[in-house]
Length: 124
Image (cartoon, rainbow, N blue to C red; front, side, top):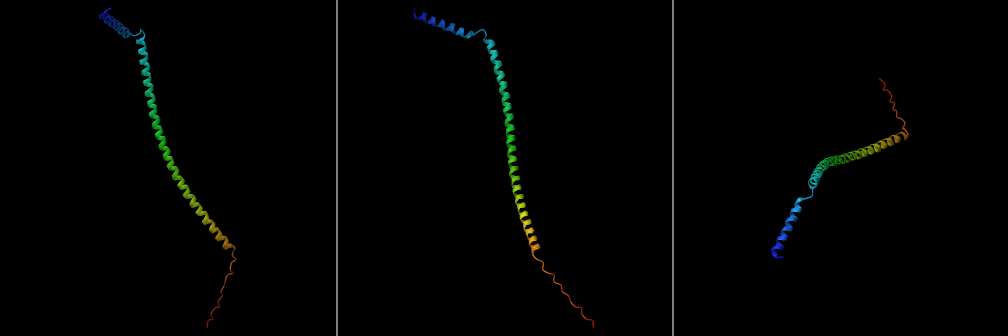
């Protein structure tokens, strides 16, 4: 076999191989349709999941803002409660002092009343 014959044989085998690979299997068109349908279904699922994710992000943001507002309200209410508790304690102390003064005033013996009598001036 000469070099030309060898080259011709290799070219013929390569051509037949390429032609065979290009043919594909008889069910490949159906398989391609099935895969395209699967891809479109997956794309729809992805879009739905993406929309749900965005919706949940918005809900999370709103919940975080509400939580922060509630924390601020809690701080405010706690400060008000502490202030009112201080006022109440001061009021109780003041009331106790007044009750103590009243008890002390009641337990002291009363001084006898001093009465002064003056004689009428004679009319002359």
